[in-house]
Image (cartoon, rainbow, N blue to C red; front, top):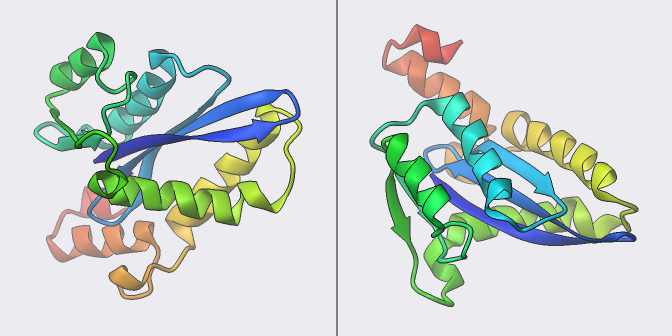
Length: 164
């Protein structure tokens, strides 16, 4: 898993949008919109990802932002059985997949209009994440959406519970 967050300007000030992505198919497994950059904001995205995947033994990669290296966040990773990995300071290439998701999100959603408030951003983000996971064609997956690629993989290994 890779994680990062980005800033969005609204008429009422900045809001922050966090994403956690399963690297295998690029599926967004957790996300959160917040008016605050406190650690609880990224923890909420992590909890969503943990609920969706139950990924014990998985590597969780992020930058060295204070939220991701906080005691609360690193403790939760440990409790969930995830292995924490952080990139080098100031190197966006180190977390390229998460940065790429942020860039796509901003190009396809955020930079297309001005935003009144957090609620507008949250609703647009929900719509985009659903579209991205279920309908966006990714070249690296043979021009299939992340959800479809995952379903095909699990069916190919005979795991019908996860393929459904």
